[in-house]
Structures are given as structure tokens and as C-alpha cells.
Length: 199
Image (cartoon, rainbow, N blue to C red):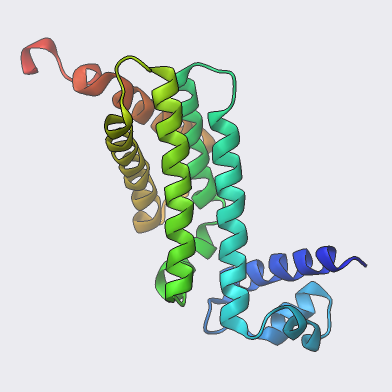
């Protein structure tokens, strides 16, 4: 078996065990058993459980950023891209709900980990800002693009916060409705929900 295949199996097993048992209750033995490798093999790749946990998070971040970039590069209208981004963000958390909740409650965070998260956020921010400037080159400068990214990303955060805090497992239709609403709200402002008299 190739080294990369074994490493991928270990990361998948670790993701499953951390999500099911929580960070503190998870044992390296459990991960080795699920990955079908000797416990000693884990330590050839990762020095300890915390390092393995951070490797799982780093893999999730890489996957997220890669898909985010792919969505931005799709040849579809701007509002449709925004809807796809929001849909993907909500699906990403919904489909990893147990792991996401465990990570918020128990995840061990250190400075190196915080830096990796900050880098992923910065990368998606640059990608979003670039798209906005390319879509509206005459009206959106770098500062406006960045402010727009902050607003758009916080809209997504609000949707995610609702999923995580309520324990709500939303259906695909519910996610789609939320994604379309938020994308349209971002593009059109409150005019889509308020009457002319209220503006």
C-alpha cells in the first residue's frame, strides 16, 4: 500500500473517531483499529493525538478552500455563484455536524493551528474579492471588495451558527432556500424583503 493511501486512511479514521467519541475520549488505539493499521504506524505519521487532530482539520480546510475556489471559477452568473458558495458552506458543516460540534467544544487550539485557519480565511477572502472586482471592475475597488467579502462571509456564519446552536439538521431544500435568500439579500440589499414605504 502506498504511503499516501495509508495516510489518507488514518485521517479518515481519525475524523470518524473524533466525531463519534469527541477529542478527549478518542484513543489512538481506536483510530488505528478503524484505519486497519498498527498503533505504532500512527506515530510514524503523527507525534501524538493533538498533531493528528490538527492534521484532520488541515485536510478539511484544504478541501474547503479548493472547492470554494472551484465554485468561484464556475462559468455561471454572479448571484448563482454566491448561492453555490453559501450552499456549500452550509452543506460542509451540516454533513460534518458531529465533528464540527466536537471541534467547537473540545478542539485543542494552538498558535500554529490558528495561523492555518487564518490563512484559509485570508485565501477565500482574496478569491472572493478578486471575483467581485472582475465581475464589477468599474464600480468595485479593492477596499469595497474586501468589505463586501466581510459582509458576505458573516451572512454565511449566521447560517452556520443557526445550524450549530440549534442542533438543526436542515434538509437539502431548506439549505437551498437559505442559500438563495442570503445570496439575493447580499446582491439586492433589503429591497427584496422591505416594501417601498419601509425604505
